[in-house]
Structure formats: structure tokens, C-alpha cells
Length: 106
Length: 122
Image (tube, rainbow over all chains, first blue to last red; front, top):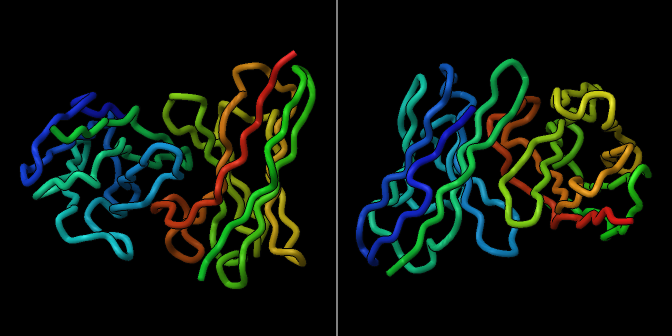
């Protein structure tokens, strides 16, 4: 089980966003990914392998962590970052997603 | 450019089956795991299973075992997901999504289809 916190994050433009993803058992960093989903759109891969940015993702998005605790950081949020962010893991060939963190911009 | 194109929306009765297709372009298809992920209205993401077309290796979620079949037709670069014994709570947008690296499973899904709405109602 992946538990994301906070459920909702409300920040001003330029502030730093820290999103947490906690696993109920240890996850290999190879199998930890982060997604951004905007309303009406398919999810977009941001980070894979816990810390590798996907193609075309700005460097203000970064991922870190190991074991059971992982973090997605957005160094300076922009209005276009309004979205729900999901983490994903794979253990024993079973893929699960966290419930999501909603990012709002003040 | 990688593209995954899915079949259109469908309305189904409880107890029936649905088969959704996902057609990929060229190398985007055969050597990558193609996964199925669904999203109920206003809800999160749920992985259903995936297939590596070149070897027809299938991985499926325990929750859907016995109710879902994932198959491939390499001649048309198409992956199919069939869900049987449909219930109203199967109403969701169903996405196909490609793994980010060749021949790897669940590193991350970097290309997604446009989604297919399946509505189940009497």
C-alpha cells in the first residue's frame, strides 16, 4: 500500500512543494515512479526509478528517497503545476498507485 | 513519434463483457510492456495488468485474475484488454500505457492512450 501526503497542498507561485509517498513495505527504487494528472487528461510520467526525470520534464521536478519513504519536490511551483500527483510502485509483479496529492495554487 | 490509440467509448449491461483495443506505432509497441490502467470517476489509478507483445508475456493484477484477459496481435500492433462479468463499479476510463524502457516492467509508464470510457449500467 502506498500512502501519499498531504491530501491537498495549497501554495503560492514560486514556493517549494514537497509531496510524500510512504510504502507499507520496502520498495526498490527501480520501481518507484511519479505522475502528474491534469483534469481530463491522461497521467504524465514525471519521475521513474525514484529520481530519473522522464523526457521533457523540467528540472524543477525532482524525486528522492529509498526503502519506504519517497519524495517528489517541485522547487518553484507555477500555476501550470495545478494537478493531482500520484506515486506508483511495483512489488512481486503487482503495481499499485498512491491515492494522490492535489496541488492547488493560491 | 510514439502513439497509442484506443477504441471508442462503450455502454455495457451488467454481466456482459467488453474488449478494448490499443494500437501502437512501430517500435513503440513490440518490445515494450503495454499496461492497462483504469480510473473510476473522481477516483485514483488502478493497474489491471500488462503484456510484452514480442513474447506475449502477461502480468495481471490479483484483483482481476480470472476476469481479465490481455492479448496481443503483433501483425496489427494491437493489444486488447477484455473484462468479463461487468459490474456498475467497473465504470471507468480505461487507459493503455507503455513502459518507459524496452523489455522492462513497471519502471514507469511514459506514453498513454487517450483513454476509453466504459459505462456499465442496467
